[in-house]
Amino acid sequence: MTPSSGITGSEPAAPVVDLEGLIRRCGGDAELAGIILAEFQRSCSALQLRLDESLSPLDADRLGETLHAISGVVANVGGGLLATRGIALRRRVATEDPAALGAEIAAWRRDWLLFPAAVADAVRQIGA
Picture 1: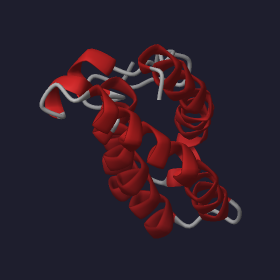
Picture 2: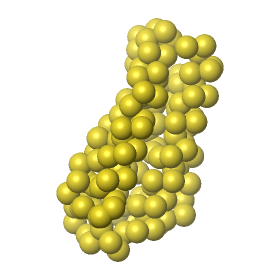
Picture 3: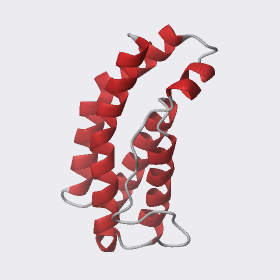
């Protein structure tokens, strides 16, 4: 782990949804939380496409913008750890050579790809 970034190439993101926190932020309304999670599920393909397009060919500016956007969406649905890692990675992409961050980018992308399954589990838990 790099001391300033809080991320490594092999550290798992433990992609989970803080469902209790999401429902709390929705004023205790589990139905509203379900709607938010369902909207996230509908947006996943577009977000993934945007990420893939920023990686091939590697475009540091677009990658930074995409990491910011995805991290915000992930944070909104209760994926705080993954979002925090995404923002830390975004900062590094802005100040370092993104090509040298290949392992960190790949690890974050891997964990991002696992996150929709965590969202699906949360949707099942609340019966949305």
